[in-house]
Amino acid sequence: MKEKVRVASGQGFWGDLLTAPVDQVRNGPIDYLMLDYLAEVTMSIMQKQRARDPQAGYAKDFVALMREILPDCVEKDIKVLSNAGGVNVQGCAEAIKQTAVDLGLSGKVKIGVVTGDDILGRLDEFAERGIEITNMETGEPLSEIRDRVQAANVYLGARPLVEALDQGARIVVGGRLTDTGLTLAPLAHEFGWSFDDWDKIAAGTIAGHIIECGAQASGGNCQYDWQNIPDLANVGFPIVEAEPSGDFVVTKHNGTGGRVNVQSVKEQLLYEMGDPHAYITPDVVADFTSINVAPDGENRVRVFGIKGKPNTEFYKVSIAYSSGWKAVGTLVYAYPDAYEKAKAADRILRARLEKLGLKFDLILTEFVGVNATHGHLAGEPSPDIPEVQLRFGVRGQNKADVERFTKELAPLILTGPPAVTGFAGGRPKVEEIMAYFPALIPKSLIETKVDIVAA
Image (cartoon, rainbow, N blue to C red; front, side, top):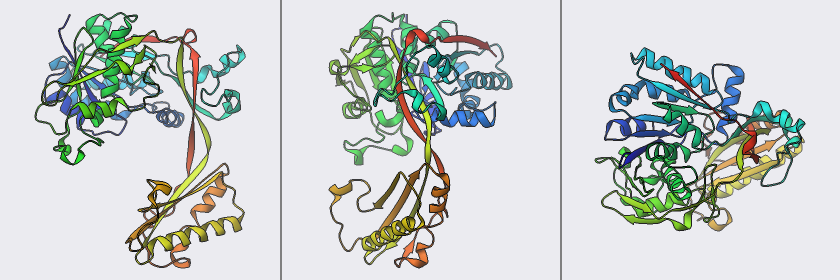
């Protein structure tokens, strides 16, 4: 058993800093690289991509990244875990396999393929069996929106990832794997933790929670003393140095920008936290009130004393469904009387939409530079405010009505208040709205599968 395992965060979302995972691999010693690509809406985007192209449906950025770092990972014995497989995990694995072959790494790379999270094709089967799936926030039955469902994925925990690592996988790829499981799995694998050792599983889960959002734990998006955080242009992403006991240190590579301290770690701990006594994942219920955080040197924070409780009998399901159409456009009004001009344009546009008889679920106006961030708490602006951006959006079920709105913004330039600019990008784009339907499903209904693909 190793005395210490280093798990590095390479990104916090699909579209994060492209150089971060490369730097994590090349700027210092790590054992594992975890890469989180998925958010709730991402799965529906990938389903649409695959509907247009059966070969799509996964994060192709991951394949390009592996082409760059896979030789380093083989040379340094670094293993990679990611949920980049989206809704086409097999396709992603095959692309990685071909990449390894192209790089001359045949025989040196095993890919663990984790499936079972995608239950879109099983929803009707569940309904026929009388298994009710309801919105865990509203109680709405799935049947109310079934014909509009675009994606349905279970949040899988760390167990199948550990199984893949136990079988010798250098790269593990899956679909809707939990963010925390991507860090917990290497620790459970290396230290031989039992999945009913709740305190250690909770510790690994919280380690994953701290680094799942990338540089948000190492100085990015940090409120505390943000003006003095050094060299964010070269920010170092966080790394967990874990011990068999479950205690761990959060740090980053030497010579990188950003800052890891107690405040940055605490801010990330608060991210997406509900009941601090019961942070529920598929693997464990972690008790955030048990966490101890202390300085451990420059850019080092020790986390210890974590307690956990038995996991639940349910998986969470992320369901995305079509919920109408939207369009958003902007105009910028200049001094003098910038705010008064923007408010007048708002009134004029609303009157014209009403006259046209267009139907919308919501019309939303924001005055950027005045109250878009703080709403009514911002109070009235100074009359000398130099410019105000009018951001005008509509949402509705009738696509034709939303499209008609997009033709009404530009006419304000010559038929509304003076001193307008900023009609950037031309006519607003009509976009389909994806709504979120969270639910629970018994774990007994879900079968995960682990395959090993050798390059």
